[in-house]
Length: 498
Image 1 (spheres, helix red, strand yellow):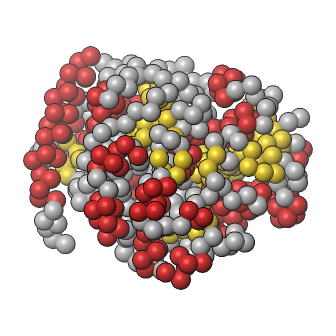
Image 2 (image 1 turned 60 degrees about the vertical axis):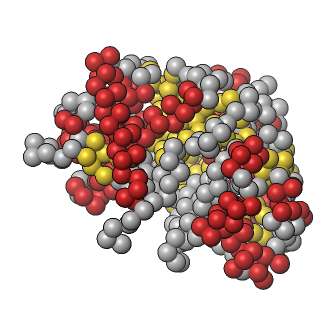
Image 3 (image 1 turned 60 degrees about the horizontal axis):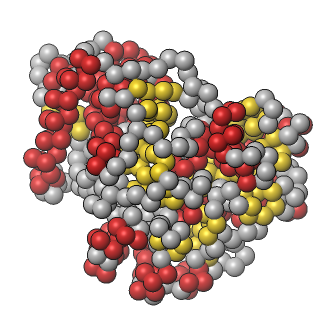
């Protein structure tokens, strides 16, 4: 028996998958944790909390699958992106990690925008400066916590800390580094000239590797604490977006992933280094083939439905909400929702954008409101698809994942609004599976990532095809949706009622 351990360090939980080489996914264990918000606009997590949660799920898997756990031949990683972990020379965190949700670094963004032209950011970073990314967070630490900055030995991303605890290796991979705003994406290396401009020492930036390279081996100390066998090879792993694309089998051009979780993403694989010159989307290094992943990010996708469920309608069941939405025709009888409850990234890159319902009438009820939220989220993701088309990225097939893939109604809405066929993977923990596949490819268990994808990834036989009459109706609604933002964006600056 031979197995692979794939770890996905998320924002709300850490998960670990045991993949049986011969028989597929054996089990997935998870442990939840919280985000600390010590002040307004702050979002932090203690790296030690991540490690404690990791040890818990390792022990759980060993207890439930002793033989399979003892047969682990490789370990891979996926992790939340953009976060900043600061350690001393012993690998001990000097402060809580500043994660992607954090918004404290607005002043540092102003400094970046003063020192860097938009064209320069586009050519080097391929991404617009935004709060929550590691580089502006680091500048905040440099300015506000100088003692910690002086003591800094290495900067890591969240999943790198778990790997450090397992192998003793300080390092990161190109996908996570490229999402930091301190990285030359085209050169796949740190943007050294930019770092000098901001007076940052080169020594604190870790060596950068490709995701499938072996970072080290399980240490004796880790073995004693976790039950893992000492000497197991561990790869560098990647950020969760590239890992998820591998776990969805989207490892060639022409396939597009629509992920509706807390936020939402439209992402795709690109062999070429392609980016939007207006920086409305993100381009990061992929974890396969030295390629790239291009994606648009919406901040409140699944969260919009969660907000509606818990704070407005007080409905206990998402399935019931989906059924209610299914009772209403496409277009929600003229009701349109903008899902900007926490600002928006793609395409507006506007933290002050706000949500709204437009077109409310006496005939509307809870069912219309639910469906309009589902449609509004799909419209926000269609914005990314339009930009993809503008920069030459084509795709005729959507692979749906996240909570949005668990509702037949929402899947059909996506097909009709995107005007593309939608497929659903039979594997539910795609990032964990992607971590397993990368580990297997990096250690020679698999001949290639594509080979492993062909072996383990299957899709539901039900395919959601766009309906022509609904497509036409949605085109009109989408035009109004886009016009609503352009006509009201100046009002967002007023922050009425704050």
